[in-house]
Structure formats: C-alpha cells, structure tokens
Length: 261
Image 1 (tube, rainbow, N blue to C red):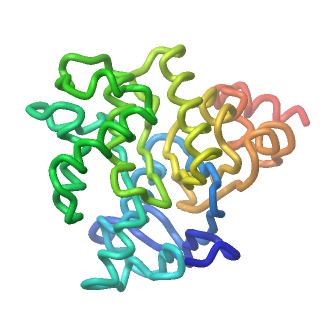
Image 2: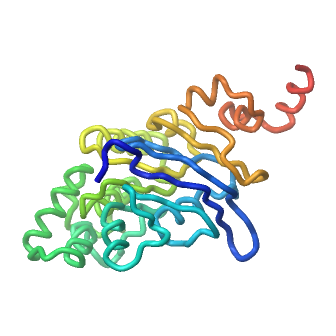
Image 3: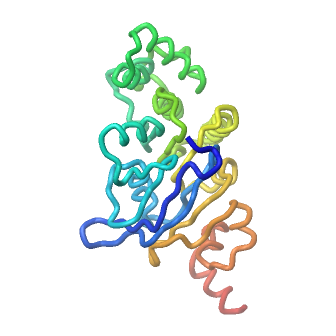
C-alpha cells in the first residue's frame, strides 16, 4: 500500500472489441479517497473503461495499476490480492433475488474469508447499517424499493472492506430525491471511511454533488477530451462538446453560437 501516490494509474490504455477501437491511448490517475467520475455521451466507452479497470477485459495495450500492481498482467495470488481491494456495483444492483439482503452481503464473506456463519452475519448487518438498511436485513430484494436495492448493492460491494468502489450508473432509474440520498451516502462513505470511488454516470446533478474530479470521453476521437472539477469544465472549457454537455445544449444551438463568435 502506497498512500503517497495515486491509488489507480491508467497508462496508455487502448481497448475495443475485435478490430474496433473504443478507447485510444488513455492515461489518467485517481487519488486516494477521491470521488472520480467518468463522463461522456452514449457509446463513448464509459462502461468499457470501467470493465477494463476492474479486470473483466484485457486491453489491446497499456497498463492499469491498482495500488501499484498491474491488473492486466497479474495472475494467481497477485491478482486475487488486487481484486480484494476493489468492490463493484452494477447499474441494476444485481442482487440475488432468492437471498435476503443479509445473505447477499454474507456471500462474499463466506466465500473469501474463514469467518463463521455467525460472524459473517454480524458483519453483514454492520455493512447494511452503514447504508441505512439494517432493519431490512431479512428482506428479499423484491420486497424493497429500487433505491434501497442500490444501497444494498453498495453494502455487498463493501463486504470485504475494499479500498476502491467502482459504480456503474448508480443513480439510473431513481427519482431525484432518492438519487440525491444515494449521492449523500457516497459522500459520507468517501469522507468517513476514505474509500475511493470511481463512478460512471451521465447524471449531471449527481456529478456536481459528488465529484472531486471528472474525465470526459468523446466517441469520435476515442480519447479523454477534458479533465477537471465539474465547475471548471462547466465554466472554463474551450471544448464545444464539453460545453454543450455541461450546459445541456443541443448541437444545432451550439453550432450557431460558435459561428457567431
């Protein structure tokens, strides 16, 4: 563990499917305890980048260092050590429907630790308490709301005390009030536990509420076209696409304005 340098370093990452390049020569860093957001339009490669960062896919070239170890080339015990440092939540929550919330969280503890069932159950309830769901520990996912399912998925992702939590569209499908509550939970976990968050989203209210720093991907160039805080990218960017995205302007309006300048 090295708290002096970045906890994640992506170096010259090129990725795609078959002969189609989706991401071309991406390099960036994520700091310890940072809430780091990956933004961009539909089809720009946000989820593709996330899947490569958690080791689901192997890039065409480049390195992805998690706390100094390259997840691309790691094998055996080294790879398992890297994976123990990360947790993942998916857009749908992806809870096991036949298991209670507590059982969903316990699953990782029983699979990857030597804890007794009683100890795993206690820790699961503690994790659910962190996300405000302890009293729902014995409920099935179908018996709770979509927002509560997202919170339960966070509890499960945190079962093994990861240093990094990757989230794919956490606010998708939630009403504004529920989404704001989830944003607040993310901030609380980042600030109180020091967890680093890497979040893929296109929800601008969430971005402004939680992001320390943002990278923006652009489909046409397949690269990062902007890096900075949400306020910086909204107020001081010279890139027409970034300006259009942050100000929610249709392309035709922006083109006419740029022609007048």
